[in-house]
Image (tube, rainbow, N blue to C red):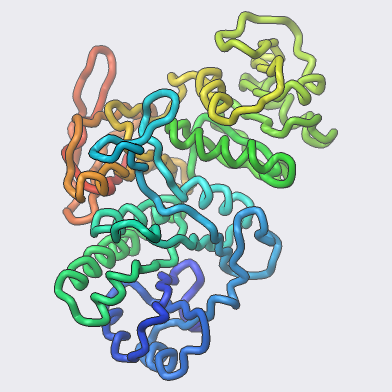
Length: 433
């Protein structure tokens, strides 16, 4: 690794094994990619990369591993997660323009962003790299699909270890005009996020704090909950159970204890204090005995008993949690959508990220449009509007290929909303206090 480039500033690219000519280094001149990842000895190519000012890293030095096998305490600046899906909206089994959907009819979206959020919470400030590749045995992805992949990782502050499909790789090696056009489209998306580095310091927020070990017997339920809650655009804050004692629960409407076991004695006072101060604590049936409560209340969600505790409440499951899909839906209903910091309308194919500046003043709403790739890259669909809960004085819209533009509020009944112009792939709303 180049000594003068910090881990957080590396923009990685996996060098194709079929590229044997050092002259391909010219592709990176003046662009955002500054780090080449080689699967094995690279000889003259690695030397040429270093002479061009690029960092060189060998893949086996990264200790890359699947999420369940990561050593979170390893003394390394970069955590690399492998075995991930290609970010996209799944096509329906019958083909055509229809998208596959879950039980509610919402599009079934594959995203790596929940993995990045979990990894960041467990890695203690280390840079997160995500390893995934275009699907094999399918048509090669187009420009829009690559840009979605870039934005899906970057919107969480993570990095995609950029990996090309064989057709694009061969086209670039041959100097194909079409391949170069796609390459410029990819690097333009990467450059956009490099131009907005301060956003990487923003803290992801939501009304729900999600507490678990996210490992062992709790891994499936906890990680699938994160995935499926994000698909619902239920915004949350990931809290590693081992760091609960030092976690800041301020600003949360609710906390869910996902692990189906009694909390350890040191965790109970922190969670009970959160409820007594006015919060909602959601617990499994097994964990419920640790929080007796003071009186029964009517619960609006079937399958839970609601009890008062100080100024707040405890919602305890009356049966074992066995389906993360319905658990995510229950949690959203218990928290209530009225506590969503961002309400989106007509945006079922969008993945929403909400974060706040380190000083707590300004907000950032990032939208990744997974429908873009299925439409061949163009904007389209119904008009999307947003309702923003926090007080603010202005909202500016940023997209990958245009200068930011101010958005004007629109009164809808007793609410203020912002109607978004058509955009492809990605948009960010910078919310100024």
